[in-house]
Image 1 (tube, rainbow, N blue to C red):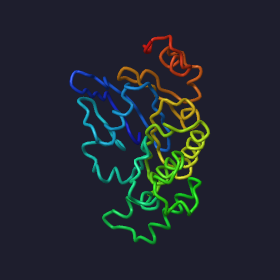
Image 2 (image 1 turned 90 degrees about the vertical axis):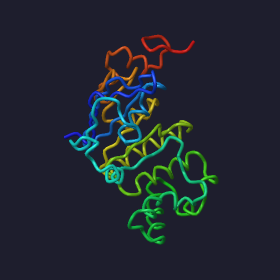
Image 3 (image 1 turned 180 degrees about the horizontal axis):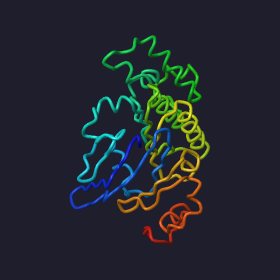
Image 4 (image 1 turned 90 degrees about the horizontal axis):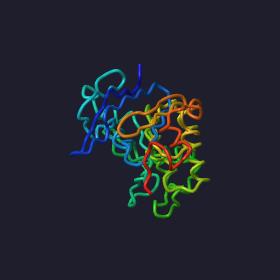
Length: 250
């Protein structure tokens, strides 16, 4: 049974149709990466899954149940989220950022235990305990992204969502983040959904790849099949060519 399934999901904003019938299937323990250019509907797809946007048509199923029948708060408690911009709280030290959900849960974790857990999660993303008491403004972009990843895995989530995980990072740090995501997903046995336009992320993180274009899934398959696939939209995107069926600004 798919962990998450989208069936004909459509979403418009005014006269702008962003999703025009998206079909996706994410199996348990799988790492699915959704690719596509800017404005193709990747972020809107993620927002629909998370319940931040309501589809105009189609159905989203979670563990085989219609999303509207699922306890949304319970579902979100099973997830972790790595945001594109880090989304750290500037006024809180790193350890409180990492343990934020645990500190503010219905049954909150004590501060000493929360700090210890935060230090443990920071270690898993390659950051030492000295980072715990620093503030986000004192960290580099790469370190902030690692802190965001530590926060995303703080509750050992069943499902991990990553929104453009390497945006704004240099190639070396992007490679570090990609490898961390791949290893952490395997270590905690999470099901992962990543949206990106970075092909290095795709090749490092993905088990399966889905390409969104013009509001539909143009191609979906195993990552190892991507390089030989003949779909012209996928070929143009993977090869980064200006010429092809995807119109590029000139």
